[in-house]
Length: 73
Image (tube, rainbow, N blue to C red; front, side):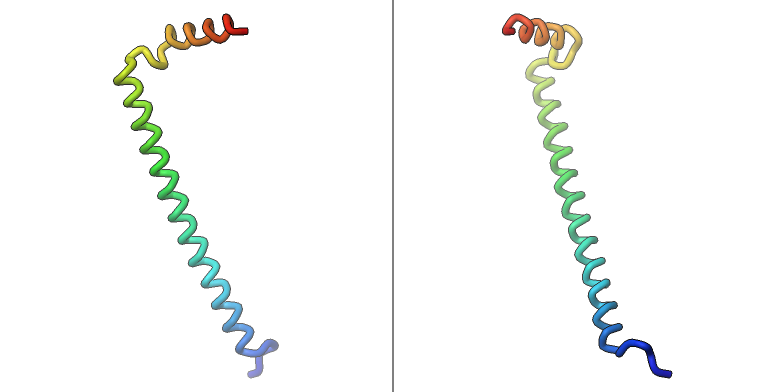
């Protein structure tokens, strides 16, 4: 039985789709790794800031910062 398209076109189509899927999997893994590193770095930075300044991020600290910005205007 003859196919409507030549066999070479089908092989080329399947290989192109396979390479595209492999490329997408690799880029997805790369971005996941980079985002995980950013998450670790960001949480480490916040923990370090809180150790150096235990008042950081508390309600009184936020009120002081807002008052400081209001005075600058």
